[in-house]
Image 1 (cartoon, protein in one colour):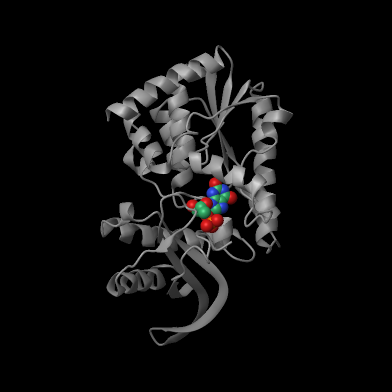
Image 2 (spheres, helix red, strand yellow):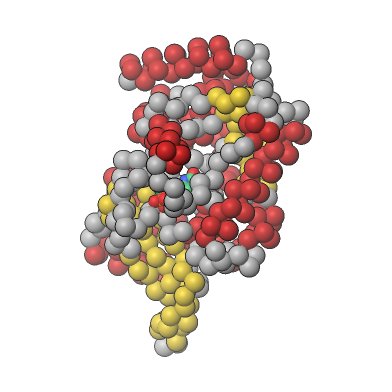
Amino acid sequence: DWTMAQFRDTKIAEIREQVGDGKVICGLSGGVDSAVAAVLIHEAIGDQLTCVFVDHGLMRMNEAQQVVTLFRDHYNIPLVHVDAEEMFLGGLAGQTDPEKKRKFIGGAFIDLFEEEAKKIGGADFLAQGTLYPDVIESVSFTGGPSVTIKSHHNVGGLPERMNMKLVEPLRELFKDEVRELGRELGLPEIFVGRHPFPGPGLAIRIPGEVTKEKCDILRKADAIYLEEIRNAGLYDAIWQAFAVLLPVRTVGVMGDARTYDSVCGLRAVTSTDGMTADVYPFDGAFLSNVATRIVNEVQGINRVVYDYTSKPPGTIEWE
Ligand code: XMP
């Protein structure tokens, strides 16, 4: 696409101009935005960019490995992979309050990021995959409603503390445009088309206490759900689809035995920016097939429900 090709060239020139021979550090989340920002900046300034991936162990199935493979092996971008699963799960132990879980994860994330940034000798710039709706949302938060629905996880405060300036090449773009730019930059479709994923990861898809065991159960159910969605050719028609693991056990029957296991919730919505959302209307046969597969294949789940709530009044994530 000619327009996106031109946008790319313009941004590359701007990044070179802004950064000069300075050092840039970029946090990768596994999501589309930070990946596109990193690849664009790498095209502009090469090895002046270092990426840091703080891996909280709360990613979907195989996603952490995909990030490392893509950036380190495919793009040859210097990448620091911080495996912090134990630290995050340790800190989440006993926590059940959604905001406390979010605050802990956000805080720990910033601390680890800062530590790694110092280890590589600091940087002059911090790169972020901020999009246009993020810019709008933070403006309306300061000027508008004084109620925080959910505290979002970003590197707030860090640029000032470490005396870094921000590089935000995607600030004018909407999600679909970021995807187009990602394709223009040759990012693989599995990355570019990927549904948005929240910073706190699976922790906010496990209401109540988060444990490694619950994360593993949820990852399996989520992977089956997404596999069926992809096989049905529906992935790109959906803004976000994911499984949730409820802190509720119910009675079921498998073969001739009674089971007493967890409930899995399925969510799928359409949206253009995540601010409002409609429920994706799967047909019943699709959902029963997914439910059957999850109950048969995932030990620990014996019941599956579908979330029929739009946003508002529901939010997309359950916490
Ligand atoms: P909610 O649940 O508020 O989510 O309707 C709206 C969109 O934002 C994503 N989300 C987050 N993204 N950090 C993020 O980067 C967060 O803490 C966070 N919380 C929610 C959510 O997945 C949806 O796309």
